[in-house]
Image 1 (cartoon, rainbow, N blue to C red):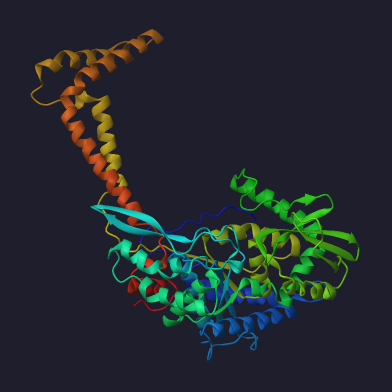
Image 2 (tube, rainbow, N blue to C red; image 1 turned 180 degrees about the horizontal axis):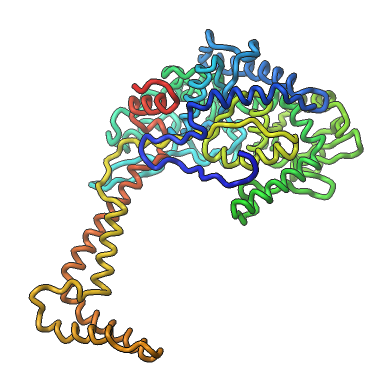
Length: 544
């Protein structure tokens, strides 16, 4: 897509339906087109050309991935193509926060493995650990008598807005007992859910890490491998500490005034195209504070893990200072400017982790780096794809070329909860009949016509036939019809009450279906065999 023409990306409504744009069958062709485009793009990133940075990024990041997988006993990439050593091996990238996601999110990982296998490449999942968890609980369905309900069951205690990267498990007992509590609440409502098989893996990962997100990631990745989806895997925090990323970040910082201008102008056009009035959606504009300019990165300190914008100012043509928003003192001074090689700046930025400082991407710069300097094809979910409509516009404005294309993928899968035959169409039909009984009771009078109804019926007919030439005549006609309807209402009250009872049953049934047909239940709550079949089938693998 070029320009900012809004796209209608909506999650599929029916069970087992897949959104794929472009279709999965076209993914290899899109990947090949991206490779051709990227091979001829040799942008200068302050002294490092794009081609060299892509090779560097793959080498560093896949090496970090091997060490990460080895740490959790998941080093199972032997025999798979290695894009860090074989330039002809494509890399298919996706990513998500390390949470208990629903199948619509998880399908991206299986698609990455499937597409990579089809083109002789490797899949890579980025664990987006610079994000903040939305909750430390999942919604669990259960029966309450003959009613279907759902309740949030915690797997840890809430610790505030700390990024996953520095978020430790707060309550080991709550974490360890989660599966038992969730399964006890469900009470067999879902047959053979994945949870009791997989949660012990998350608990076992306590031996390797106290980080909540990494335990969940290790559990998920082990399940993927058991179902044949072997992808490389790496936390995004590690990506952001790679040398290749720091060259990318230095380039954006060196040209921050122009990047801010492109970013904010693109954002303004995006909001106008989509009719958005909010100043925070999809992202806020990059701000200024005096001579300090907001950069498209997060920063925080390990001992105070609260994300804040990174601010930068050009002190003179060859010196730049960085600080974390809200801090008075600069964080670091860089030898960096629009016309300067970034080698010295990169060396200074490499010192930050040793000082306990996190320099991390935001959503738009995450995929900008991943699509342009790491992978050959990126797989987005619906939310990420909508963000990257803006990201594409920024990329064109800043780099002067079209960005590589991406695949948008999402799956709707219901967990197989008991539902109701009620439908919205039935409810509309009953509502229409109730309205007709209310405003046109004369159409539904019993036969033979009760004597007591004759006078009101005649009055309504006379009113309907009455004059309407003046405002007073129209008002008199209106009130006469209302009086007649009120007098006729008792003769159809039994039918109306019967319909109201049916309306109540339909509303209850639709409420039940809203719970039964939700696509948002965590994948671990789904039946294992059905989940496996749906994910592999949607991703292009065999249905089980």
